[in-house]
Image 1 (cartoon, helix red, strand yellow):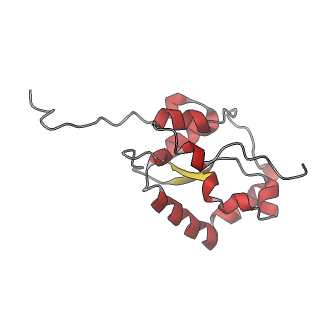
Image 2: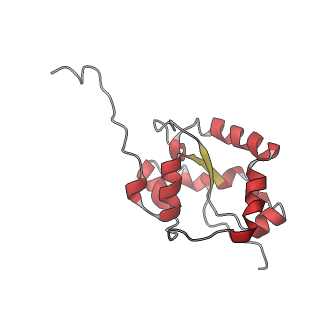
Length: 140
């Protein structure tokens, strides 16, 4: 199969899952803390993530997901929006500018906390579920 990788997960399938928790479970990677993904090749992804092409793509994906965590309506990201690659990228992807880099079906908007939770498989890093407000719910 060479350097082609089988696409295991997709945005298309992610958004079929109705709840935040189901989407998190679908994406979590369970990497170990401190596990290196690029080591000495880190400059490859750092250069990519500061490129004009990436910034333009990122803005389009934030608009698509309406700035919501895991693209779940009602979960707006209050801080910095991270565009998470659903299928992790490799050095090969960066060196060869594979389609995976700019594939809308391979990215989803997440908050920093959710991004950490996905990579470390730790639900404790997830933000608290927003409280659904109802008319007069603050009246004693």
